Length: 203
Image (tube, rainbow, N blue to C red; front, top):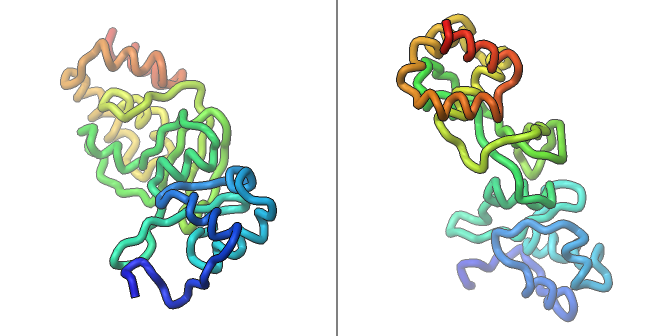
């Protein structure tokens, strides 16, 4: 039996087999994506699910898994979120990334944040939860300056000693490019964070 085959998959024939051949391993599909290539999309999706060619992530959202020697692989976060939002403009990260900024934070978080322009709320996609937050602006990728500002924005949500983090953030200002930090604060900081940085830099 080929390595990618499974004794639980059923043979596919006709139109559903053609649809299966069009699926790209690792990609996330919405029902309407599949409906473009099927005249009986709900029946075909059920057959593809039964055959293991698709996995359901949420209502109307499916994943064509890549296979490894250990079984099907979950979708990449970016691919999953792009399929859910029907948008490429978002930023995915964990609050654990704050620990790389050097402000004394050490907590690890089993949480994934998605800054975006469309959806707000906690959604379960597959076997994971994503905390979607609508933001007017966010960078395309993480930077030390953005994480510094975002950490201050979200300080009250974190399992850290608030005063200790604030003291360390002020003490570490000289280790940052002040111009870049001020740009990040102007673009991504909330009112309290912008005010705090003004006081620290002009105090």
